[in-house]
Length: 377
Image 1 (tube, rainbow, N blue to C red):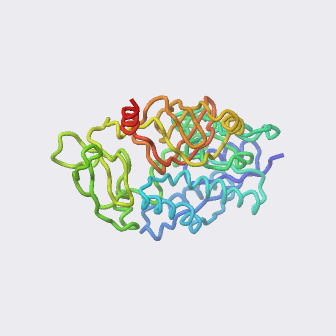
Image 2: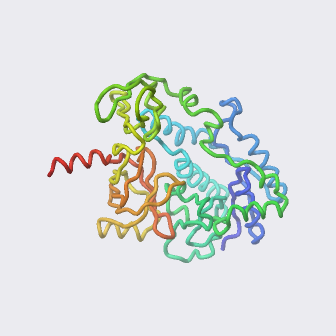
Image 3: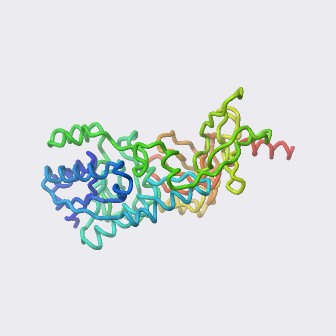
């Protein structure tokens, strides 16, 4: 029977309300604050110190103990170094997915379950667990990551890279609540300060700075050409492929149509650009992916047995889902999507759950597929 639960306390309203709901149900709750980034190295530009103060304040209000755990070195190695390596290779990474995979649902889980010897871990993520948001159904044969009640705040996209077995000991107390309900509850239990706190968005270690200015601190700029994908003509210059991502507007002057990044070539330090927002070089229906991290045993078996799986796809957590045919290392979309970005994650869903994710290697431009079809006629 589960009695003792560690809650990851971030200093925000979601984790604090999660701790309250657990305590209300009679669990013995311990709060743990994770320090993943060294604020002193970044001149205090991250909000980590204030988050710790808010975490301490919330735990005092809730009358639970708070401990700290330091993952600065591990975060640098598993998340930030990978982030920099990817940008140097012309990729666009997702550090939130990496942080959940390597830090929160791996190192932190092991710390809570093995070192502290607690029974389960709880987080303030908006997601649901097929075993129950409080692990009420631990006798179930399989475990799945379910879509939460609040579809707008749904965070399953960022959890798609975690190990499926970690869900067997993970609670999501907010899974059946809307964000508005969480804030209302926070005010009712004396946590108004957190209910009114501005939510953190974007990448933690970048903070409020301009991204190009930030990345220049770590990766040396190297000038190269913008090349028109149709004519092969040089239409401008850039200061480094790491400063640009697929689909981004280039703001080159003196052209009839705006140019957008179609693809990046690391070897020649060239960025190929397409004229017009809807250029076929910017859209894809066929996507090549790496190995799939599965969060649904049944779907994995179906793909293995049938060679393909009908499901839904997204590669940006705010975008609508698109139906697709999933194969082992390929996704065939029913409708074209713009700016499929190498380094990002293809995340797969059915009607109720997140099935898993795979890293995007590259999308085949419609322009290329159309040319191949024309040659075969």
